[in-house]
Every structure is written in C-alpha cells, then in structure tokens.
Image (cartoon, rainbow, N blue to C red; front, side, top):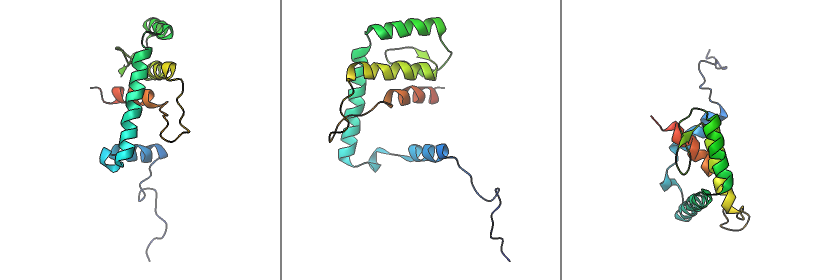
Length: 130
C-alpha cells in the first residue's frame, strides 16, 4: 500500500522569503506590459533624480560625517559615492530620495511610489559585489 503521508525529506520546504526570492530572480522585463515598463522606468528615474538633487543637503553631510566616525564595514553603495553597511546605505539612500521627493501622490493613476527603491539598490549593490 502506498504511503499517503510524506516525510519531511520527501517535501521541499521553502520559506516565504525563498518563494519571494525565487519569484524576483525569475522576473524579466518582458514579463511586464509595456505601459508598466514605462511606469517602472519613470519611477526609477524619478528616484535617482531626487537622490541626486538631495546630495548637497545638510542632513546628508551630517550622515556622511556620522558614517565616517561610526562606519560599519560593508560593501553597499552610497548614492554619490562610498560604501558602507546595508543598514547605513539603506538609510542614506532612502533619505536622499524622500528629502526632495515630497512624497509624490501614489493614490492618483500613474502616481509615484518608490520608498523602497534605494534600500533595494543598497542591498543589491552589496549582494552582487565580488
């Protein structure tokens, strides 16, 4: 008689994070409709433009000074140059975008909303570094 209950060794157990990672790793631009690809490009460019515009703001000079004094070792890229730990890079990069962005409306059709983009950029720069 066949066994109806599988043992843990028979079942591939994956966490929610592993499922999300597999989905993200398999995602390709061609999977998106062209109008969604355009929105994606616009949002990325908006984030980068806001981050560049905020580079000379006083809070970011203070953060860089703080990072110099208390730098955690890391391989994550700071927008504008330099590397640090993932948490410091995510704080710095995300704050750069929000400093100038004024929280664009994301409730309107086509509205912008990209608060996690810089954090992902920081994580990805570290993840893909040699």
